[in-house]
Length: 228
Figure (cartoon, rainbow, N blue to C red):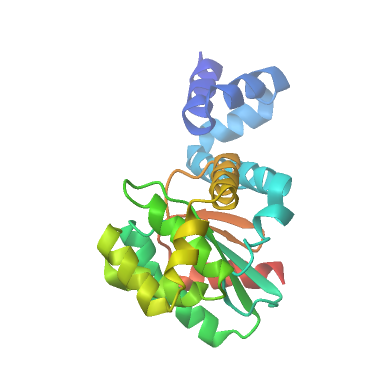
């Protein structure tokens, strides 16, 4: 009976697949089972370790690709030795709140390269993402990125103002925004996000870690430093 209860706990922490493996492995018996029953507080730590390892395995499948930016869609040092990947959406409040902190990280570390992956998951964000890729094509990505977040939620008016502030060739940008190349890039980022099992923006690849949500800049810097 106690073993069944422990398997149920493992199911809650790791999911039913993990519980099945637990039962089949034999770890549910003997001293290991007794130790876990006596020390249930370690189960959350086990869950965290499992999730971290799972995330690292998923990242390993695409690590080189996800760190390769769409040409020009980079903040900081394009040749930097430290790479931070940001999955972002211009309609995301938390993405907007992260801008200043990332700018501070860039200012503090001349080796930091921030690869921005346009992932428009909010209603009305796709055109802004497409114009951002057009800005990258024109070598004006950082200017558009900052202007777009400063203008507020994406709309026809805010996108036009951001494009003007960034100094884009508007006709060329609008043409590229509707191109197959822009569509393919957005699809690629969506595929990366699914592989990494991201559920929203902002999401990050910092060094060898996969991180979701608005987190302190120090958390990202620590992950980057750990890899180097």
